[in-house]
Length: 380
Length: 198
Image (cartoon, rainbow over all chains, first blue to last red; front, side, top):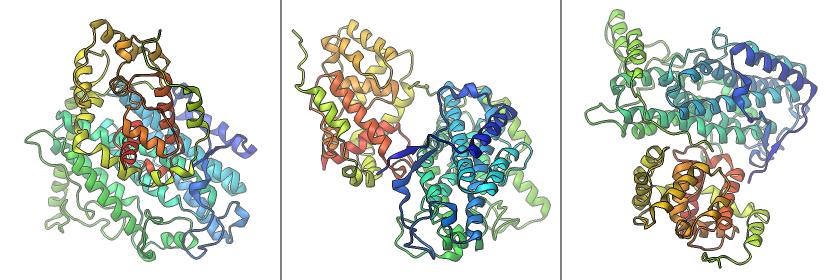
């Protein structure tokens, strides 16, 4: 049962970081007045985090509450790295998306996107707080870097978070596919042996569910409206799925295995699963759960399509991959090895991924119409 | 004389419901919330597609047709109100601000006569107000939150009902929220209804 603690007093390190954060907001063009009465609270759900290490080689021992309780420097470094990557994605997504507020299709979408950006910034605060409060000078340096890397300059840690999000279809795809990966990452950290990290995840996951819902419902509303043809939507789905799959990392990952051994990052279904973890294939297992979820969700989204429109599908997990055993290889949407020349392959990609012409048609034709089902912002 | 039946000890009821709240008692409910939600909301009786349609089709400016659509989905028959009463309720939908329920006290008898109908109008115009449902009330009682039974819209009883669901949202673990396609009030209200029926 959860009693969320809201931290009232911040360390000087974190207070100094907040000044840098305000400069970052100005730098990326996020007007703080857009926040209204929203507060960047630091929230912990200690009950759900648990007290005993749940898996790995330290299983059964008390969860670590402070840096000096962590038994090895390499474990501290691994935690700092995970917190930094998570924080990096939170600020990156705001850099990618905040320009969209000016072109929102409805007030509902504008308010929803703004809420998402506020909450992503709060998640970034939470990660910066952990770094500044628990990890000394090393943590302070990493927290500063969260605001120095920049999505528009292509310097964010993960590829998806450097990709431009030029329009609202990309925004809904991003929140559906990439924020869904975020849900997986947060849940995998919710059982962490480092208790402040585990306790951070409950409040973040509660907020993240709204982000996923915005993506899934946004895509459903587009499909239902029927202005943008499903064939074109399919190209954007093809583009984003492979990106989402790549975010789970390499196959046979040794760093995922070490994270499991240390107890700092579990499986997505760590608490629910009765099976022993296959430590050599942790990323693959999480990716498969994510992939199955994408297929289930797409069936639901596709049901809303107009008569005569083709069914929307999730492409094979072999298609267009940048990471793992299929990286750089030529597979079709159906997962068959592509037979043909390089020129044939390039022509195939034009057919199945968005082109400049598609972008032009999307923004200058379809999006000039009532392209998404209207929804009212209820204002409560 | 007040024509609306009132419930004795309603202030005491609110205190008991919201201050003496036993969080541990909620654990079995939270553990099964997703399953319970699907059991209720996705039953054919609840017409989930019709519910989703209303989320989009009820918007300002509110019309009588929109209220009719809500009545249809609720399966409660057409309201037999004078036009002034309908207008009074529609105006209140613009004025009311969640989680306030005291505005209900200023309604005429006709408007207050059916809490299910009025709560449904509030839900579909604001999404944050929960639909009144007897099974949901029983579900809350199983969690130790006793809300009196009523058929009329008493602002204090409905206020306690709304606040209780809001409280559950606050204390529920993240596992209750991983995936949902309805407003959170509906998620909890529907799950409570299934729980209350068991």
